[in-house]
Image 1 (spheres, rainbow, N blue to C red):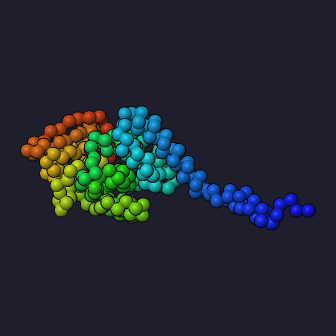
Image 2: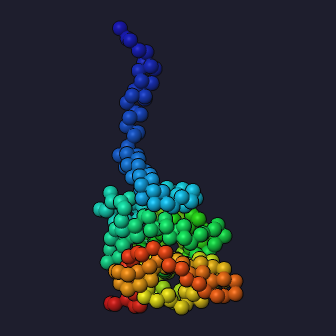
Image 3: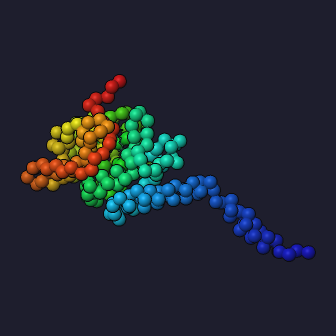
Length: 243
Ligand code: SAH
């Protein structure tokens, strides 16, 4: 005696046999990282006062775990910097959000970043502005970041391996400049390459301690003003690469 017709059996198989199989390990991983990311936004970023809805929504779309070494993905949304090789680090999520907020990005802006590192800060900015030029002094990191950003579909970022102290004169002046390594003095060429009415955010100070995050503004007459914000700790902005 048949309880179900052959057609019903087939349909039942489709529902109860096939459907569960279509829920893959990858979906599981995606959900896992989405949950960690949401937690990062709530407990590290919103909780500390970054509330710009556009910045928060961009931080929700950029998958930070794809910017860290594979064996550190589980920690990508933790409240701290992480090593990315060659003695360098990807900045703490809150610092990325805070610097992005201080930069006051706008959709028509052309931005220069010094210190590409993993490419994460550039990826976040690229969703808020017209174009991001970013310079990295360590060739391996610069090339890896360029490849990663291309693979992930970020098509308004240009990465160059070179010395950030020189800026990128071919595309200057810039509406905004963000420096993610700490120089001991504000690099004069970066001030030169800042547009009148522009804004630069940078950490400044000696290696590892006593650095401050600065807002540098250039008014329409070219006068420069500097405001100190919070104390920070960044890797040093090196003068030249030791072989
Ligand atoms: N913004 C990065 C983190 C940067 S860590 C991210 O989102 O992952 C700082 C980076 O600045 C390092 O990769 C370091 O190699 C680079 N750097 C240091 N001195 C530099 C210089 N003079 N010019 C360009 N990059 C520099």
